Length: 250
Image (cartoon, rainbow, N blue to C red; front, side, top):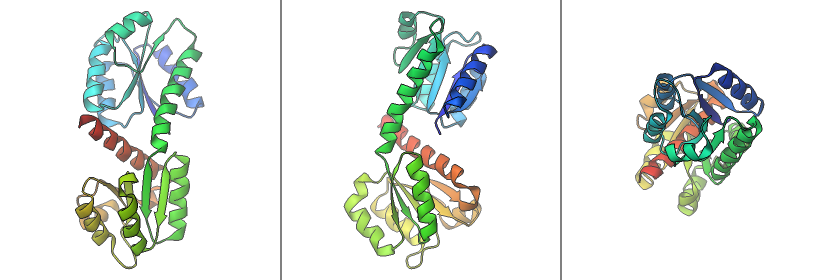
């Protein structure tokens, strides 16, 4: 599920946008001023920001700079009563612009276009799932497929190393179970990080996260299988997005 932050000081506008976008299946966050928006930009994994230019307390151009600083890959659509030419002059690097005098359908079309492009980029990404439980592998596959990722599920220890040897460059994220039958998840992690230090690894287990961290303290993230697969999907998105941002900084 894509997350959109609406930054606008008009409650009516935020309410209208929220209702329309939630109907389209987006997760919506709201900020009525720059202080709250800054907090959300720092603390939330966002796919898109709808940014008003005139916020009253702080200019939207300043807030755009904050967003670019913390999330270099973030997409921003400027929304304002200002003409489009003025919006483009004020925030030239936004991915889209919307004049509030236009019908709201134009904005929805712009949002869908931007996020479909983002989704298409996500679809090229591959997740390698290492788990000895066939049921868990099937569930991971269904969740990843639904979220638009390609996935490879491996339960046999020997096959893991064959896959990594052949397809390491194509794999963007590794989901690693701790309790494997031959080579333990801890040993797997050390081998993977030794050979592929830049690969993101999400530890997955029925153990509580504190226990996972005790066994492997330097993984990129941890997933307790009792949390449910919605949480798993969120963690995958976060790691994929963080990888994009790291790439953008290079």
